[in-house]
Length: 272
Image (cartoon, rainbow, N blue to C red):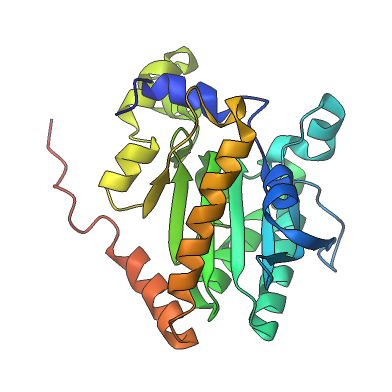
């Protein structure tokens, strides 16, 4: 049982030294060939993706990218994709479908970019198309929430056959700050919101929202990258081996039914 509170877990999930998508790709995959652009507007650095090999097996791998330095943060828009990033993700997933490659995604974003220009270029439509496309893929899809999983910006890359989370990652409908601002009109109560939102990996596993929680080194993934990579590698190999036994139609149906069933067995909300 973790000794960290939900508020502390949020801080760990946001730690700047926590391994990100680029680090997982570099350490878990070989022969990575990055693909850029959405073929409609421009390149979005906040989504990193391409073709790679995972223990010799060709796969499509993609995920959110925040960057480590200030310069990288700005280039990656602090991990908040615009519609171009989600259209790039769709392009890579359609390519994976065409060539029968499993899709592995890494989720780490505070949410999709909410700016006016992103909405003008079709942000909501791009996210919706990602959700629709992922729900119908006939190749294995595995998603891992490595840090923050915020709102539809995270869900757009997490409609998977297996959704896993690192032990101290968080996954929620919006940020604790946003939750506190909406519910209590006071963003300073974000720490209190962390306890109310049920956003920890353990809460979500109990609720059936994610299918597995991967143990982190003591203190968090940022304290021992190599141990984290070994844990993730073993989990991805296990899940991929199981999913590759299913037919394409069975994979799409399993994914669809899993998401349709979420929340059915939860107790009804009490009236206050």
